[in-house]
View (cartoon, rainbow, N blue to C red):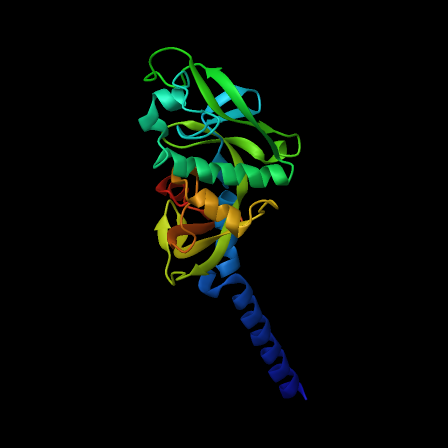
Length: 253
């Protein structure tokens, strides 16, 4: 009877140990969930943003000049669009304008912006823009109150942008978790790879809408390929899995 009980106790002990090992990771190795949690602490804060036009008329009001051949410009050389034809040519600038117009028309249909045709005199937007204020024919984009919760500021190495959100990043898949850690600063850091997915998409950020935004690379801020694997390191510190700090500066986020 005692032997059976001992065998039963030993069996239960090994079952408990096996379950604990699966939950915590083998020999301290992080699970996929542990890795995701460490990355998402930073990743969830990062949005994909589409930049508003550089020309700004006032608080929450932006301006997009039309191409040189647009009916609103009407061939009038008093408009900068026509006078500086090469900068607003139908072949290059015109294609970009068409995409932007589609983007803002979708937003207008959903009540996020209001679009008006307008003639405006605008001060130079760059130190390289000589000649003083210029008159433009274009589209005035006014942000509605409904849109304001999705609008924020973002910056890259070069400049600061006002953007609207297309969603946040999160970990999609974790792979290649190392079996042996590297001891750095007294902590066991395990390497692993992860890929991203987009979460928290607003209702306007459909695949079709995102595809339009992706055609204007300079306006799509913070976006990186989702299927590119990123390699990082994490250690369990104070009971929580945390990324090695330099990962943040390696472009992974």
